[in-house]
Length: 509
Image (cartoon, rainbow, N blue to C red; front, side, top):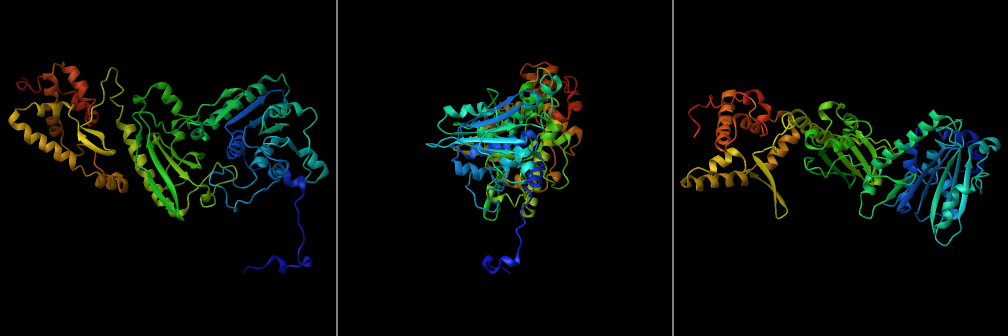
């Protein structure tokens, strides 16, 4: 039953404020690592409409520091005080559609997880620079929520870059006990670890914010004066990437967009592209769902606990993009770190179905594509069907460059009207929708080409193609190699090797 706060008198309650010293230390235990912590701060910069974000990692042993500066719209003094207050906004409050925050904790918890001294300087248009500082050691001493008005002694110069900007914000981390501890300046191992942290952060930001970095009026993130290049997990520009149909799932009158991809077999892309696409954790680790909220990546490569799916070698080419609005944070169990998400129960069946199909397609590519394509000096792979576009609509046409089709088209002119009419009929009546439905619902029941067909019947088709290729001037070896690049004969390599002039003796023209 609901009640009015005015009905409760002062004699009926106590004020149970948390002890500042205990609470502020507890705020350090949200499970951030340095890369997720910095990504959380960059969310604030993007929400502030920053076009440039500069990260600076400065090594000086135990006095090392990290700063994050942006050219966003900045904050007034009152706004800064609010932003520095733990729990500055309730996760239940409605937010702007492009707001990347949620709990009102990120700036504080992310920073406290890595350092004991957090200083923020900010300037909004036509306002002076405002500065506030949390010093955990000081709060522990006084046991009060005292937000200091000035930077620590000797730290003011670390905020000087803001002076030449009309607006913007600098976040300064000092006393990096979770990153460098009490290391000496000449501790080479500690310095190497610090530099390795820079690389880890760069790789993480390149992935998490790749969609912002790819835009035409793109965001730019700099790390020690070096610009970060985006890492797109889906290789959308690779010709051999398969982009499966987009699915729109409805949840509470809001839309969840799901776009599956099957990445190319390594034989179809150059080694640099293949190695880069593996990401920092390798191909196997990167498979699965990629959950985005307002284009910001939350979860990278996870099967979301659906159907007991595990990461295995055969499915490593499967990656699925999921786009959520920020109004679904609670439904998807988005955590404070914005690095975990779990779908609501009503969406699991559809997501599992999409995962099953994508995994199936990825397994087919892994098992069969490139098995023969990767052979040295192989020619372009040949399919019986071509995907084409006409007036903005996709259709499928018989590949008239296929040797067997060419052989048919070279039959006497009297046969041509019937042959071409048959080809047009086949092209116009490909049962695309039924194939898609059957494959989506029960992919495991879809037969493969020549599945269960006796070898002699498969050989009959091969013989006709072989004959056509030999007539075109190819040697026996060239003809066999060419057939091995044709769908679906790459699965019948042993049978292809039996093809010879002797086998079809007397049939060559």
